[in-house]
Image (cartoon, rainbow, N blue to C red):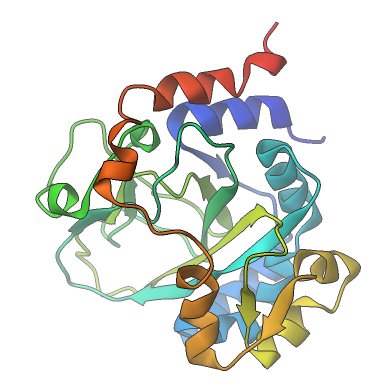
Length: 263
């Protein structure tokens, strides 16, 4: 049965994230677990099954539905495999980006968990609804336990699709079990942005027609430029003053985004 995209989009807009379980075949889940335990950083995106994960047709279809455009690109500047072991402290609340309420939603951040994540393994924490507010680094650096925070204790193969502006952090890791979280993203495709990939990742993603579509504006660069330049050289950086006027209207704008689907 095809998932209810309208319901999933409403969850995404309301909470700032949606949890997708049982979307991937067991062979993909099994191999991404092996890859997640072996490769750190962006090297994991050279793995064939991880490439299949990013080019999953049903996931890309949902991304296009949420963004309201059929023209979607993979966002290489979000590429990373966070492979952590315990024991370790939690914290580090932050947002990966800040969403401008007077502009269309153009980006989605994905967190894929290739193994079961228990309470003891330091799960990712998110604050539902926080994507509607402005947070600055001086504010988030002081945050500890937050009322309403949720811990993403999930099963292997779970994909959590989030707004890049949602507050998130890691919980304290109390076990010696490693935890992998493969982070990547999608955005409304735009030829003016630099989508930089290493040659190995570029070749991996372009094995399918969908992969070619998702990377049609991508260019090959060395590893350092592939990590950084695709974001900082092409996406505007905003200051607190730029966002100051957004406080209080972001929630209304997000609801308005769904008005055409009400009824």
